[in-house]
Length: 201
Image (tube, rainbow, N blue to C red; front, top):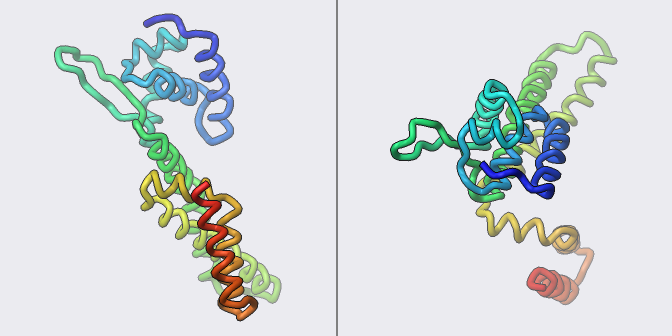
């Protein structure tokens, strides 16, 4: 495998550092960055050579990436070695990361909160604590429901939604004015047209 350019090395090193903040081992982050930036399937020997990692570290890293569903295993005709590549679509990568973070971090918290809310409070302080826990549970449930909806969106729709940014707030403001009678029909139509124009810019 050819020597990595300084630009590629910089990306890989940075991704390793960032990966550790997202709950991914630094070595695993660098392996993934290499696979991503190369844009083609690599085998474990290629990865070990390019990153100067031991073969055993690469094998463990690839197993973790498979568990996160961030790489898939491939075989090439006439080659007994295993090859690995990340999803082609960047949105699939984004959604896989979010899904795995939810499974590892959010779902255990929801489970703990459910158990705590089922307990009979032994004091007034426990009642107050449960109320605070209920608020947290409802917020996490709401965000989880939103995440499920986002997961079902096509990449094109998701990209459009994210590009809208603050325009989403304008839509919500219009909805609230209409719901509570705080704005006229003409104002609502004007604001709706304004959002449509901005969305198409």
